[in-house]
Figure 1 (cartoon, rainbow, N blue to C red):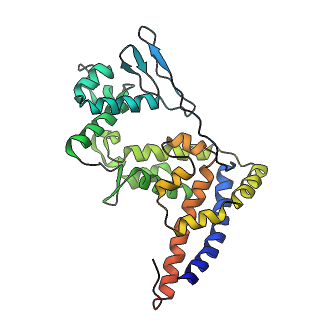
Figure 2: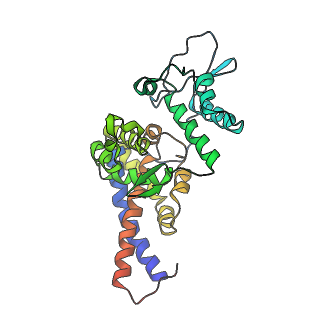
Length: 289
């Protein structure tokens, strides 16, 4: 009903201001739509030293042989994996010929230390999904399968609560794997994502001057965000709106639009509480959905 939308819009607007202040206190960044930083692209010729290197988000990149070149950036690695998957290359061949992981490495401890370990895990996952015609969940929480976007939204809710990394590890169950190998757990990627987000949050200093600018800038977008919440816009679309799609956890947390994303997540959660309370107080009124 219009009355409900009007009430919730007003309430959401108030809640948004509170969420915005909380996000600004934590991150102190301005929000504006600007092009994302281009991913670094680097190719090393054979014969040169191919050492692991880091981009601006301090994440190690894979070093993968590809013909005469060596792919050593996230974008290049992703394209290579997709191309090889189309050719239906066996995992073992990819592991030995492209990732330079010799079959002589049989120890799991040695394998996970290899610079191309993550690329191997990703290709294995992609190959399994293609061969079996299924889409594996990014994480599983309370027996519910979550996509990457759903996982990100849940992690951001915990981040707003400033939930300790250790506690999140327990929530995700990554410490339940025997033999001290939590990296094998289905939710390990989600845990590492939260760990990076939390680490970035701890290093951000509040700047009152920039906070004020942030609030003034975001004030213009308040009505739009309220509409997005009320319309139940998918989180995937929200990430695209804030130009955060496909970014690593570290890069996302440093992005100037990250405070707005946090504000949106908080607003959405509080909006749901208002909606539930209104429905409970007005059981005789049917909503138009």
